[in-house]
Image (cartoon, rainbow, N blue to C red; front, side):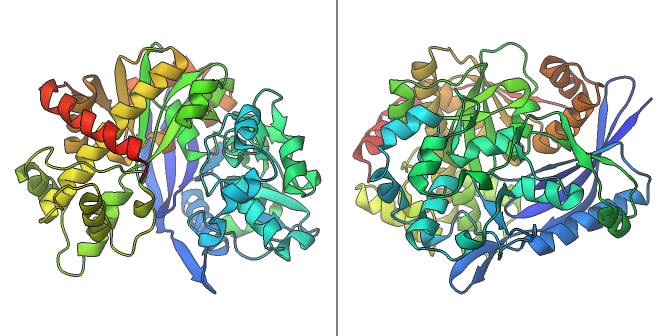
Length: 491
């Protein structure tokens, strides 16, 4: 008998409620119930998430779904690192800060004075990024934020919504590992890091694995949504964790790229990979489904292109096909940028930031919108090749195939450029990987799917995957040398 599951995929720019139906033929059908906007809000000069409005949007999605009948389960995934603080009455203290807020400037250096970063990596296996939960908390401690004195519980964003629906405070494994406070060897929050922060260890919740029931909807939630006593499942609550679960791969000689605003490129491992080379390359170890680890790197992804489009919107609103045509008409591999340059994190104008980078590296700046798009996509493809080499070197694992999942899987030009740059076959799809992973982990929790291998078999049987073959290696080999030289400069 077919079962219906409801997934909420909350991203930095939008959220969606997706209904999935898994039939007896092991084919998953999905449909969008509701889509709603999200974005950072500026409050007194700081960037926050409007979690109250997002909760109302989740309720709306549940109410809309309930009109068609209750699902057998609900799962929620969100972005990582950000968190909410709750007081002793279980009420949220202010709005959660957003990871792009400027308060973490200097936080890495500040925390390093309390604990050497090399030792921090030995404990966590997590790459150092200024917006990690750890450094957000350090900035609050340093600034003597009054919220900390009122805090009884810390919940990651996905955990916050699970709590609102069920009344249960818990921390899901995959999203807990993004905090930079989880120790994968001890399989728990790390006391040494918490002590270095000088905050109470009691604010952290017990950790639960994906594929377990958190609790049923509270009476208040049932009243607001019209649903009955539906269970809420701990999916891979970090959106990338759910997405990687839906990679339609067989075997283990592959890398994945979760392609969106951020690109997350990595391999799957049964154990965390923490060694001298992973430290040198700033490779991270985040939790996955079935107690796997996502050994990966965060790369600035389509953010650069998205910000270019936003900057141009006052004069021209482009369709996807128009952008692709402009890029394809531009001269290839004319200039190269490092997508992870700090100047691309939050510039006032992304096209100007690209021009500034090119001038600083003695290259000609892009003159047309097509050249801007081309340099952004080609450089991202080169960044993937660079990361592939690091992953292979650090893990000793050869990568023979690359799977691109997430919204970026729809970008046919980028997919081909990745195949060309890396010299590997590229498989694109599913674009809805996060929602599909979320839904099928719910099915796993109910015993409908036995393991991760069967889950991926269902994905392969339910969606179309497009293959891209590599072409003309020589121009890319030459461009890659230029790219590596730029990375060594560390501007």
